[in-house]
Image (cartoon, rainbow, N blue to C red; front, top):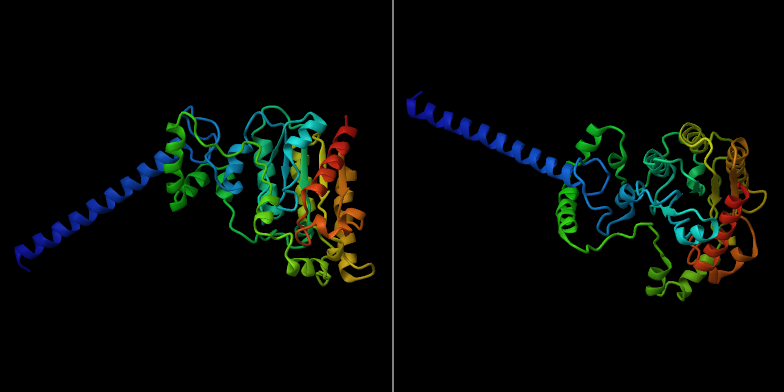
Length: 334
């Protein structure tokens, strides 16, 4: 082997080592920057940063909202409890609420957000409102998810959180975060998390669509379900509340459904629905200051097609009555 060949290989090895070290240094620098500017306002940065976050999806904005000290009550669930207004509950109970809902989520995500909210309180929470729709009725102990969720953002482990920062969408958020921190009056995501989906449905003409109306009126049977248990979501919720919020008032809401989505009496769906309801009713009965508010029943509001966009997404008129029922339950605990 000639000396020139050896020298060439040595230069390439040196270049490769330099490149790897430079790339690693750049990655570490970006991670350090992300950690310091705290793009989702998790409170983990040692720097005194501006409160809140720029407008973003509720999955990530929940990290900031869930630790906001101005809120002493919280709403958890998905779009089936989304129209329940924090402001309305505050007016009726005197408790400042934040909405930590995330569309297309189930019990696993809600339990993570509940854990996050409770861990961030300097004083005990004053109330918890939890939407327990049919996804909470699963017998699968893994509590499967349907859509991606940033579990890493709410981790107890600092190392797991730091590892979670290594993704491209975080880098994009860091740039928005820097603009947010630099602005004197930045555009901030709504602190209480309320998101009125009715506006979006109306803009799409969804309510006046005859095809939608026909689908709404058609029966929507699930074909059976979990009629014998177990109900791991109820048990995991029971354990979390016992550990972190043993004396906190809790309302479990079975969200409204249009009558055509309710189970036919005597059917397999009805047996599964009753078993699930009983699991959460028993949970409510087993702890102090806890109520089950059940709107998944046949009642006049659930028979009016104009109250619904689809089988499980209701309009503001129903949301106002649901809010009153939740507030009445919480006020009875005083």
